[in-house]
Image (cartoon, rainbow, N blue to C red; front, top):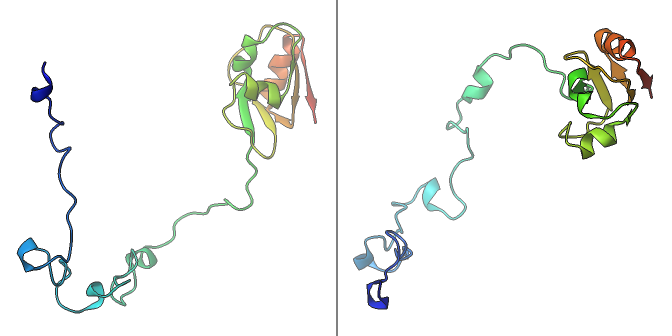
Amino acid sequence: MKMENLKPAQGEKTKKVRIGRGIGSGIGKTSGKGHKGQNARSGGGVKAGFEGGNIPLIRKVPIRGFNNYNYRKVYSCVNVGDLEIFEKNAEITEELLYETRVIGKRQPYGLKVLGNGEVTKPLTIHAKKATKSAVEKIEKAGGKIIFD
């Protein structure tokens, strides 16, 4: 390989198109905007979804179902089987689960323990909520769950 043989990769040296720089450039005078009209003006054009005064499609499509996004309660959920990585008699909190990357994100309403999986060690878990099956499995293994 020699210095005189080096060249940039394909498509790396294309020049920037300069709009409105004379008839000879191919995009002079009207700068590719055509003659007059809303789209030719500065700041012109219509917003996304605008259909020329017609009722937009999004307003024609019927609303289906119900969503409760504003008032729903979102918990950080963890399965009983995921707690098997901790040592015997460990105090498990939402902060500990977040630090050890068992849960990816801390939610505003706290921790909820779900009953999927098995636990064999006695653990003390601090949570806001838990399912019946999760409580049964934790107590069966000799642990306890404290509702904060």
